[in-house]
Image (tube, rainbow, N blue to C red):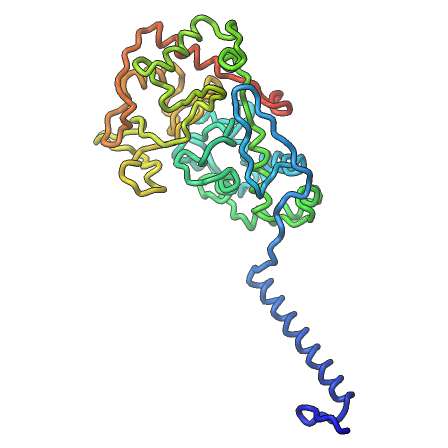
Length: 373
């Protein structure tokens, strides 16, 4: 029986040779496509889920359980990698600035400069806030422009007034280092360096930057009546009193833990120009809602005695100045928060409030405590 073959092919040898030719042409075509993909910068997506065993991050007295995203469970390997990245100046354009430059562990992960300095001496417009207990914040940065620590981690690297280095350059620098290739393999199962992996590792390290078990915590939650001095105990009462300090309206204290922030945004009258308008639009940049003009995220007061200067613009140098500012009702402007108003505090009451704020200085985790000055 004769078998009909396509295109005039007479036997199986012809078919075999044709198929071999087609296969070769296919291989060549796919190779060309691969070269094209490489040239245009396209890459196969690299898995960025940590491969190590998840570990628990233990919250100290006074803090709730640490919220953990489902796609980035902390492991000892990602935390170790994140810590190394946090201190590495190679993430900046001129290899001079690391995350730790503006979030110094010696100053409880804050910046002593009024306005943070970037590569080449550039000056930012805001003071770098502490990273202590940032794991609990529903959004990051003063204006809340990042919804998570992961999304926050890489932004300063590429910011032209901060570290000023394109992400692909940072990735290329790290990929040249055999030690990093080993650490990325330990953390994610392959040596591939990606910005997503950088973000996840730095965020996992930042979730370990916790501080609690302060004199306030031992007094409030440890039920130790001697943990606070008489001045600090009076200051706590003023802090809570809505008719006096009214501080807890935004710097919240709960029955089981205290974050000392509501995580929300308020215009408190800082940074107002001669025309009575905020110099920095703050949260408005992100929402374009008029009432958000000049509003900034409530900072935590944890370890506040060690994180001067204060306010988003670093305009106040001491806790005494902060208390006096609030007592004066801030600077009037069209968007001033309704909770900001003149409060009548005597000299001793102001001193008591300052002493209470000092009682919020807590411990840092092992491995970070020794880096404190």
